[in-house]
Amino acid sequence: MPKLQQILKTPYYFQWLILFFVLHGYNEFIGYIRLSSLLLLIVELSAVAWVLFFLFRKMYRDAHKAALLVNVLFFSYLFFSAVQDGLAAHPPLLKWSLFPRLLPAFILLCLFTFVALFRYKRSPVKWTRFLSVILLTLVLFDTCSIIWQMVTGRPPKDPVVAASIKPLADTVIKPDVYLILLDEYMGTAGLQEYYHYDNNAFESFLEQKGFHINTRSSSNYPYTVYSMASMFNMRYLEPAEFGSTKDFGYKSMIGLIDHNAAVEYFKRFNYTIHNYSFFAFGGIEPNYHVMPWDIELITSRMLYARSIAKIVYGGPQSHIDLSPIQNWFNKKLAADHENQLQGTLSAAGKQSPTFTYLHLLMPHNPFIFDSSGKAPDTYKAIKGNVILGLDKWYLQYLVYANKRIMKYLEQLFAATKGKAVIMVMSDHGYRDATRIPGKFFGFTNFNAIYLPNKDYHLWYDSVSNVNQFPLLFNTLFGQQIPLKKDFSVH
Image (cartoon, rainbow, N blue to C red):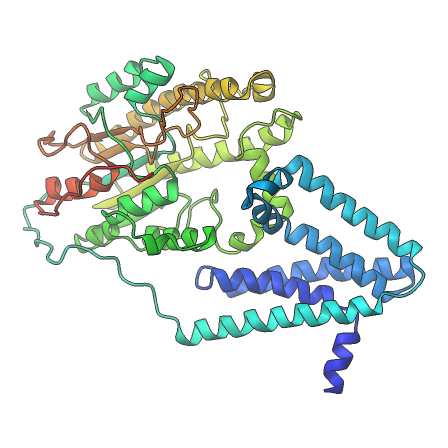
C-alpha cells in the first residue's frame, strides 16, 4: 500500500497516459498489431515525453508542473481524433469538430497551460494524485481486457465457401487471373448522366482487346472496405459484422478481406496469391499503406496522422493553400502506384496459375494528375466553388487513369500473351457527385472482364460486385455457386 501511495504521488503520470493510449488501441485491434510494433511505439512516445519533462522541470523548477504540461501536450496530440470523432457524433457540436475550430482550441489549451503554470505559485500536487489514479485505473482495465482476450480469444473463422466444390479434371485450363480494382471509378451510365461524358475511348480500347463490358453494373456498398469484404466473400454482409462502432466495423471488414472465400477457392484450385493492394489479403500483408495497418491502426488517431489524412485524402482545401504539402504526398502515392503496376508486370508469367489483386487509389482523391499527366492546382480550381472544382478534377483524373490503364493493359497482355483472365472494375462509384438533387452515384461502378476463351454467356449487364467471383468460378471451372440477388445496400 505505501508503494502505491508513492506511485500516485510521483509526477510521472504522463507515462500512464501514453500506456493507456497505446494499450487501448491494441485492445481494440488485438490480433492485427505486432507486439514488436507496439513496444516500439511505447518507447518512441515515452522518449519524447521524458525529454520534454526534464526540459519543463528545469524551466518551471517544479516536477509536478512539468508533468502537467507534458500531460496536456500529449493528450492534445494523442487524443485529437477521439475528441474530434466524439464531437462529430453529436449534431449540435459538429461545427466544433472541424479543423478550423478544434485545432486552434487545442493550441490555445496548450498555450494557456504553459502560461498559467508560470503564474500559478503553488505546485499542482493534487492534480498529480488525481490524474495518476484515473490513468492507472484505465491502464489496468485495458491490461485485464487484453489478457482476457488472449486467454479466451478464438482464432478467426475460416471463410464460408460452398459446401461442395466440384473437383477439377486434369484437363481443365487454369489461367492466371488478374483483378485490377480502380477505386471509386464511376461507370458508364453515371459518367453520361452526371458529366455528359462519353467514355468511349476507354471502352472501345477494352472491346478491341476482347473485353466484355457490363454497362449497367453496380456495387453493393458505397465504401471500399464494405464493398471488397462483400465481393471477396461472395455474399452480403451481416449486421453483426458492422458492429456498433466504426473501429469494430473496420476491424471486421479487414478481417473478412484477409480471410475470404474467393482466396479459399483459388487456393483449393492450387493458385498462388499475389497481393498488390493496401489490404492484408489471403494472409499476405499490404503492399503499400493507404488504409491503416499494424501500428497505424493506433497512430492514425494521432494529430499528425489525422491532419495528413485531412490534407491528402480529405479533399483539396479551399480556405488555405496546402498544395505544396499535398503535392509532396501525392508524388509518393504516384510512386506507389507505379511500383504496384510494375510489380505485377514483373511477376507476370513466372509462376502459374496465379491470382493477382491490384488495387489502385485512382480516380479516387487525391487527384494527383490532370488529364495530361500534370499536377493540378486544385486550390485555385475549388476556391470559388468547391463542388464544381472537385467534380472537374475527378473527371480529369479519371481521364488520366484511363490512359495509364490502357498503357498498362497493353503491357500486361504482352506479358501474359493474352492467356490471362483480366477483370477491370471499381469497388463503388463517385460518392461526391452531388449536383443532381435526389441522385446518388456511389453505386454506379465500372465492370469489364476479359476471358481468353471469350465465353461470356453467363455474364449480364446489371451484374453487381457480390456476383463477380461466383460468375468467374462458374465460368472458368464449371462450379455451380448460386448467385445472389443484385441490390445496393444504402
